Image 1 (cartoon, rainbow, N blue to C red):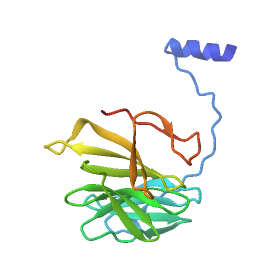
Image 2: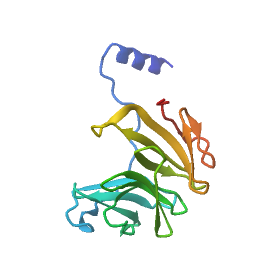
Image 3: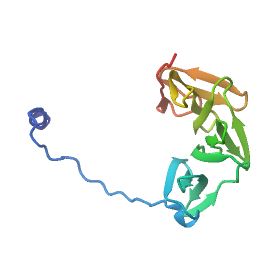
Image 4: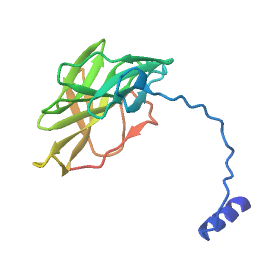
Length: 193
């Protein structure tokens, strides 16, 4: 208690305080898809599952190529339809991959399962984006509407949970626990209405 009080007092006075934490040893693995996707200037890993598989995308700043990565091996995701660019953002332990799909007219959420894409638009919204999936197959994401100049309108963003089995979007506006997930894992969005 005395040590904590002294450190708190020094900090409150604006005096420098040396770290008292023990340095931990970490191992970092560089994930760089430049060799697999020519022209790549950015590799962005976004999701990892309990099997150690990563998903992400490589970008040449004009287009993106999504991939999976496991044990040092990159695998590009199946090619989306012509004119569609995808960014893989998350995957569950069953191999369901989710993210955003972009073409010249819209941004949609996508599900990739068994090598097949499903593209999803939330009705009456201009953008739908999937962010995560639990092992029960429920997907979290967000939708927003663009203003006339292409900017996101104020108060026009909503978070949701999407159930692919029932094709139902459940809108949420406060902290909650995703059904079927670890109870300590929570997501929250501010009410935008």
